[in-house]
Amino acid sequence: MITGILREVAGEKRVAMLPGEAALLKKLGPEVIIEKNAGLNAFSADEEYLKVEVPSFSRQEIFSRSDLIISVNPVPESDIDLCREGQVLCSVVNVAENSEWLGKARSAGLTVLALDIIPRTTRAQAMDILSSMATVSGYKAVLDAANRLPAFFPMFMSAAGTIKPARMLILGAGVAGLQALAIARKLGAVVEVFDVRSAVREEVESLGGRFVEVEGATEDESAGGYAVEQTEEFRVKQRELIQQRAIAADVVIASAQIPGKRAPLLLSGETVSSMKPGSVIIDLAASTGGNCELTENGKTINVNGVEIVGKSDYPSGMPADASKMFGNNIVSLMKILLDKDGNLVLDMEDEIIRGTIAVHAGEYVSDRARQLLNIK
Ligand code: NAD
Image: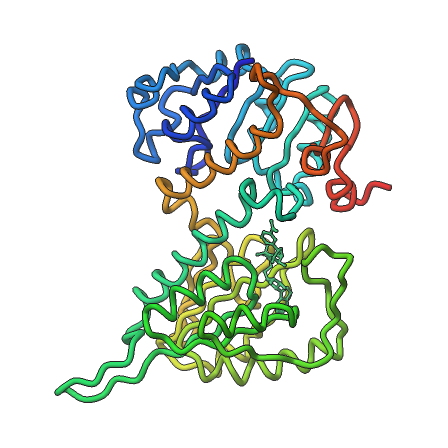
């Protein structure tokens, strides 16, 4: 079997596999080829791939030679025309937002492995690309905030006086929020964290954060550990408490998300106007609408001295390690997808494999994909 690694388009700096991980994939049996200059933005030239016997080809040749085509982002729709029936595409798809793209792939008879719907079970942890990328986002968000804040993060007691530590509020204690908490604590900030899932209180406290709880949250065990939408009464109480805590904060890292839905609106324009000039809001939920009412996706704006950074693509800004993590996750997934001769075997009885296949042979397969696309 031939596996092709594509060069990303549209400003994306990551590559799905660096030479080290491509070599690990080869050990599992398949031949591996890359598109010319695929790793250049992640600091790996074609010669580095060639050292591990991974040759480079034009984009067209990758499509014509490969059985399995791997990329970070879904290929542009026009590339689907380059594919042949039965070919397998593997990338993050963002299923809920890309129903048309998936429909086209399904009509073309392709198989799509959507990395964003890999079931989040213990066995699938090593393949969990959402977690790897959220780790990068949480880390980078804190460093970005520290750079922008006109004040120190840690407390200083010096001959020039005592400097108070920065106060941070984190909205959403998922993988990104918890990583942000860990890094902010290492830098010496005092951190408060808010989430609707009470189960994360212990994790927040063990990382040195203070958990802010609003009573009466709706939790749904059938949502697989994800948050669900909240009642209006809860949302009002939540907004009041968040307003209080945000006004006291120097930095807000907003990372609250509900899969397949618009991100919850937690910071109103009124709250922002009550925050201290010089404060920073990093809105990691920008691409799904933002947790802050004023966020503009992909832009940094300044409202009465408060900087609002609408950025969901930090992983692309740290392409070397983000690509390394991405590639390792892919290798782990391939360990369950390839047989001993390195051929792809789609075992529909395996809950991870079935859960990751968005479309196959003209059908929507994964229950999660069907749920996100509202298909009965
Ligand atoms: P996410 O990106 O979907 O959401 C981020 C956080 O926002 C979540 O903690 C969520 O509870 C919170 N949130 C949603 N609405 C909110 C609101 N109105 N107010 C405040 N907070 C709100 O989360 P994620 O990082 O993808 O993690 C989601 C779940 O998946 C977690 O339970 C996590 O433990 C679990 N998980 C499991 C695995 C695994 O076992 N393989 C790996 C990673 C994550």
